[in-house]
Length: 246
Image 1 (cartoon, one colour):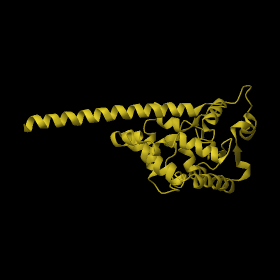
Image 2 (image 1 turned 180 degrees about the vertical axis):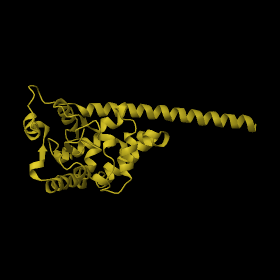
Image 3 (image 1 turned 135 degrees about the vertical axis):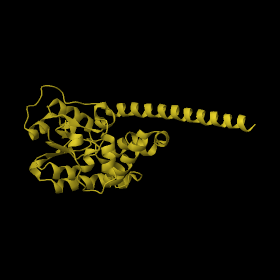
Image 4 (image 1 turned 30 degrees about the vertical axis):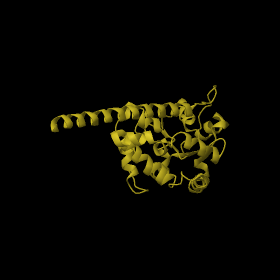
């Protein structure tokens, strides 16, 4: 397979619903869930961490992660849309926008996927687990640092970054190869852009915020378990030392 569609839109711009729609249209689609949930993609997180620690514009062996996909949306693929355009020159570009605008996108992002930066329980997992360290490093450098320019801590600057990013994509991609898409528009624009038949069913409307919230709750539970095990181990070592020294 080769990439036919490159998603440039930020995470939290309807990318999960778009992901489901593209799969329904016969375009196997890549999404952050393919990195962290799909067990068949072992090693993908290491790949993206290497991307995050390389200079912007660096080309990689993209087929290592996209070999079984013809489309990509959401992070981390959107962070390298320029590199992917150079690697797959025949591919079209899909720019998803939040249905309620830049400020709503910011609120949604802070409330969900920004947990890698604003949730202290995740910091425990970063400290104690290889997955936490890898995912935290990749997210911090590639998503929040490079793509979002390190401004998520400032609402006004983040909203401005969203707006300027949209303009950046529009300016860089030839109009005939670009679809600026809002999931509230449904199948029509997407199917026309891809030149495929429109399904006789409702466009996917996945409640991904609740799914992400569940993942966050599981992370919190995991962090408490890891912290408890660590404290128990420290207590056991201290008790053994006390007994030995006594």
